[in-house]
Length: 143
Image (cartoon, rainbow, N blue to C red; front, top):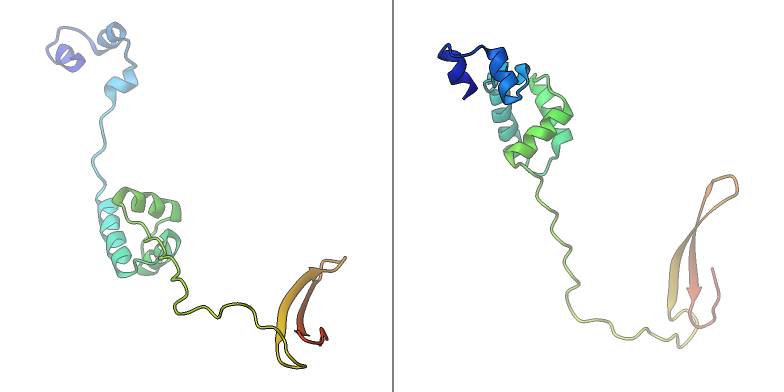
């Protein structure tokens, strides 16, 4: 509406902005056209994402830089979000197949059933301590 008043020589742009309560910078703003470089980048990004669907934005950025594109990781992340290119969710692990072994086996004699376990701890100075404990179930002897 403001544009029609100004183009018809009915009012100045300054007066129109004052009347409508519009900032003059908002009145003078012209939307930018889509950048041709960004359109080419989107094409390359889509191609790389289709070639490597398992890779995220950081590794796709690295691949684009190897091709010669001067692009940052955040820009690639934003464009991937706009294009709807997401890494597919990981498939859940499959459950165990087959029959269970049932109840734990009771040791009947020495050396019949062995139990093992890893124990982790830290020292006072921050060092790591790892032990493998192996126990004979019948005699409770620890090796």
